[in-house]
Amino acid sequence: MDSRIPKRPVLDWGGRVKRGRAHLPSVATLPNRVNTTSGRAAIYHALRMAGLSAGDEVLVPTYHCPTMVAPLVMLGLQPLFYAVGEHGLPELGGLECDRVRAARCMIVPHYFGLPRSLADVREWCSEHGVVLIEDCAHAFYGMAGDRQVGAWGDYAIASMTKFFPVTEGGLLASITRPLEISPLPNQGIRAELKGVFDMLHMATRCGRMRGMGVVLEGLRGGWWRREAGAVQREPKFSAPEPQGVAISCDMGRVESAPLLSTRVLFNLSSGDDACNTRRQHFERYLNELSNLEGGRFLYPSPISGGAPYAFPLWVDDVERVYRRLRMRGVPVNRWDRLWPDTPVLEGDVGLRWSRHVLQVLCHQSLRDSEVSFVIKEIREAIACQCEEG
Ligand SMILES: Cc1ncc(COP(=O)(O)O)c(C=O)c1O
Picture 1 (cartoon, rainbow, N blue to C red):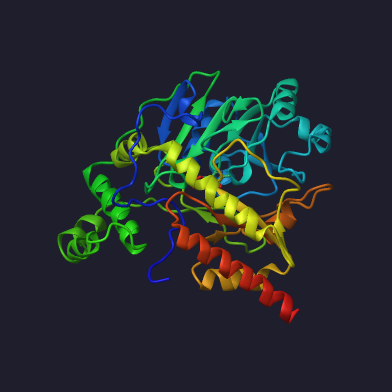
Picture 2 (cartoon, rainbow, N blue to C red):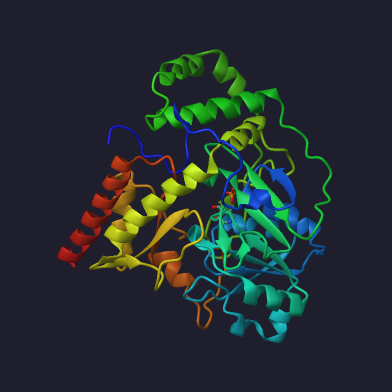
């Protein structure tokens, strides 16, 4: 491949613009909404609205990315980890002890953008007076059982960068609760310009927006360097490191409004086209990567109803495969950076997933040729692992 394969949606000439209303329900069709700078910022604001006090416990899954935990620790709350079952849902049976009953809030994600009904979780939370934050960072669109995504939670959060060609953005929404939040301050003209520049730069680095690269390189040299340097970036937020595990998350700009470019691009983007393309890519992965010797689709059966974020691929001998795929520019993620002190729990798949599951991205900006490359690289990496093993 000549240029990088994008790890998330990027701008391109001729991208489809929205015509009329989207057909699939989404977090953005819930009645109460606030735009934020990121998914983690949306979690932060949901936690602030949930009526918790410093020291309260928040249930979070053992299979997580640190950006799901950092907002609560930043607010002085305590993570209390719950076990994840093989379908990616909380193991509610393990939550009945007194210690867990003291938890005030629970964050439950729809992993990989393959949404599932949260009916049982909803019932458990209502019974125990626990505020449910439905984490739709991977699942912006679709149905989760018989409700739309985001409609099970007291609050729902979404991450824009995973679904739209923007450099930042998140959404906090609720079907039942008004979102009382004072207006978030704008980031200023320099940050807006930098946002537009970064968005275009990300596209040209991936071989999109042909012709624009030269213009951007010119800008990078002179005037732009001074402007970009003047944008203040807030420091990263670091977790305590009892085991020397460095977990740091950019929690900057949680109190700011998202950039204007994010809002404009979101309003222009065609969700239906994006969802169709994502499903096609996912289907190809499902057909060609599901039953390899040494690798398989994670779940026992496929799940429909959403717009997938990633194809979850279980790999037996994962370290070498992952290293090789990263070196070759294959767009895969792995949640191998766990929050310090994530416990070993009975009946939990979370710790094994964090090691063995590769999230093979399937966003709408991937070209068919890039998806073919990804499939070829993964098949070769796994086959080579089997031969050597
Ligand atoms: C499940 C989940 N929730 C929340 C987040 C945070 O989203 P953002 O990166 O927009 O802050 C992520 C980010 O990867 C995520 O995967």
